[in-house]
Amino acid sequence: MRVGPLAIGVMLLAVAAGAQGQRFRLPEGLVVPPKYPPAKIEDSEFRICKLMYTSSRREANGMGWATDWPFAGIHLMTRVSELTKVRISRDRHGEPNHWTVRLTDDALFQCPFTLASDVGTVQFSPAEATRLRDYLLKGGFLWVDDFWGTAAWNQWSSEIHRVLPEFPIFDVASDHPIRHTLFADAILPQVPGINYWTWTGGRTDERGSDSAAPNFRAIADRHDRIMVVMTHNTDVNDSWEREGENREFFQRFSPPGYALGVNVILYSLTH
Image 1: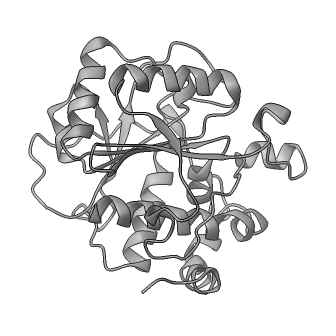
Image 2: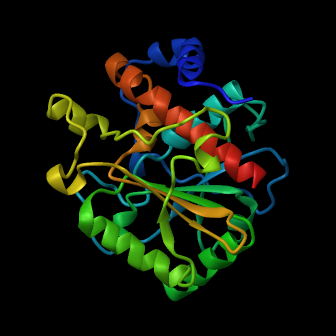
């Protein structure tokens, strides 16, 4: 059964009481130590891993691989467990197991779903490019987000082309199944980082005219299974990460951000 936009608004309002009680700034980036998975992950529940990488350049407001770490992934896993029947991996305290993983780690292949932010700064070594290719072609899924403007796009697209040179990047059509897995007609909102949104009085275009509209793009394998989702000129991660810090920010950006996030996860689990 597919759910309309009103329904997700109602459901998110129902689960938002705890988030709205937060009202303080969560730590982000390297102030939160990486959380590496054990050599063998014992449970078989759904988990999201944060992809670690080396940056060869800087982007304004970015923190390299640690951008949006760790609470974007933690909140997304939590809301997926509340809005669907997906069972998520948890530690002994009941908290979501949101791991960090390097492309050269064997644990990469125990991560069915990976997230990466600020990928307009990424540079893969030959070994990393080979490992990412193996991971994706063996069924892994990567969502990259929070990279803005032409320079960041060119950097990312050139690096992922080294990984998957025979598979083209395409714009995700409005009727593609990934947009309709659970929530009908899920849109890609242009979500600014909450700091930029606050400083500018509510603007969403972090690079001005060079980021006028968000882009929803992907790479699919030979069976038309999407392996890589790219949300460019938007910071969907902040719609999850900052859900409890500002009521207006939450109401404007979190419902469409979570609708898209849930749809993408369910797509990855069913294709």
